[in-house]
Length: 450
Image: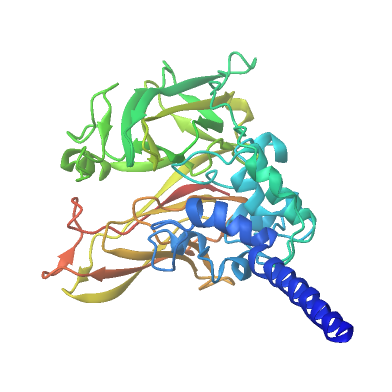
């Protein structure tokens, strides 16, 4: 009788041991699984952001963070962000959190990477990750960013200490910095819950004589998508708005404000972009000339995906230099294609060539088109770089702005081509026009003559 009892006891122990092993296998989650479950899925892989390739913003970032593909899309993958790519960052670089774009984007305190800007902090329109969540991700990356394995202390995720105190310090004026210049601002305004607010505010620069601007610096509150500065193509037009009056692009029901949209048709790009704290300096010896009594249209855009009201606030500094320091005056590119036709219910690509009448150096490019536009590409026309793509954007409301550290050098007779793909889903033929039901095809930017 003793032997069968011993066998039963051993079988019982074996069963308990197997059950314990099964429990560990089925209930323990890897560190990446926890990141996916508690951070990526609820805050990043949401509709319109990083949920799928059909999101409106996908063409900009090219990143889907849905559970089945998030890991392979993050680890060891080069980013689309031009600045991050130039700095040799990866979306997630194993063992190198400070060389991982994911960590930079989730950390709203830019001082942790020497103030370097890589576009809007994430999650855009939401709240910053907690101290514990950020540290959990940092440790996971530093441990090699493995897909499997419980390698980071889970208790960090329970630390809900805010990683930012939501305080906002206004940008110091040029005078406070001890240099010459002017500051413009968009005073504090509200963004209603679950809404994106984009507005315009025409402001006088305050210069009584012409000035030369060689640097533009900006600062915005968190959840800013972009801040763009515009000049006016026709300064005598009725489309030039009154000073110091806020004009919203969207009404409270999210419909477009027609009068604001019409005023946008008179814009010429003057500066700005998607970085919350952008600081752009023109190439040595070059500057932008602002005439006496100049005014500009300030265009901030914020997202609010929370259930509470958020605040927006923006500052712009124009830094000026003496005329004697300026060898080249930067001019604005305004290449406008007004002759094209888009057949109804059809996808059409329109190519238009523009040339320069002298040797030039291009230092910045951006685009303008309307809601039927799917993709705006700018290519070099002529010369040894003929056909080379130097610009791409796939969001008509928030076009990419590229500032070139090394200017694009073009000879007289060479130029740029706009290659724009439209998808006319309407039932009528569409051509150039001022409303959102019409289309446009404009290259904006900066250049100077060599």
